[in-house]
Structures are given as C-alpha cells and as structure tokens.
Amino acid sequence: MARFGHVVARRQPTSESVRAKSGRNGSGNTRKLPSGRWQARYLGPDMVRHIGPKTFQTTGDAQDWLAEERRLISLQQWRPPRERAHIDLEGRAW
Image 1 (cartoon, one colour):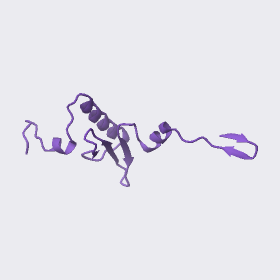
Image 2 (cartoon, rainbow, N blue to C red):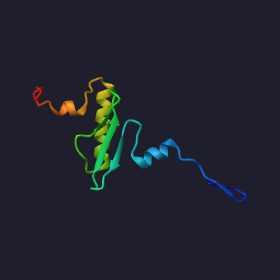
Image 3 (cartoon, one colour):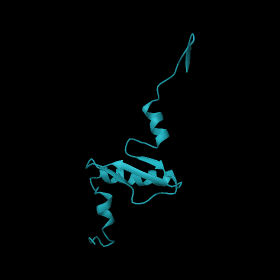
Image 4 (cartoon, rainbow, N blue to C red):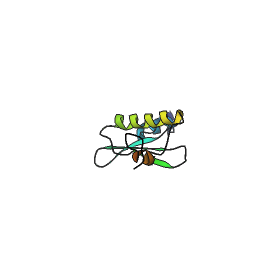
C-alpha cells in the first residue's frame, strides 16, 4: 500500500494471489466444502467442467487428483472421469 497525500492507493490483486486464495492453479481448482472436505474440479479438453469422483480429506489430496488429470491430458490418454468410473479392473465396460 502506498500513500499519496491523503489518498491511499491499494494494489490490485494479482492473478497469482487470487489463485492462491481460491485454490486455483490454472488447471483446475479446489474448494473447501461445509463438511470440511475438499472438492477438486477442472475444465477438461472437452470444455466441460469435471468434478472429482469423490471429496478429499486434504487440499493436497485434491491437488494430487488434479495433477493426475493434467498428466492424462498431456499424454493424450484422458477420458472424462465418469466414463472411467464405469470401467472395471480388466478394462471391460459395466
């Protein structure tokens, strides 16, 4: 904050400071729910907002899930999480 006579000039928040407060990292965000658990969500390559398959105990767990989604996107192996939830361990659709 800088003072100029009687006027106080405040800095506008940077995108980094806004992201840090909201849990945003540019590739999705996390938010704390009233239950105290964390939800992760992101905009997928299909331009649809995707929400994690569950809530997470910590913000770090939610961020780890987002990191895995980013990894799948970068490897071009990504599919919407709901589609992946319907695949069993042997790769068969339910």
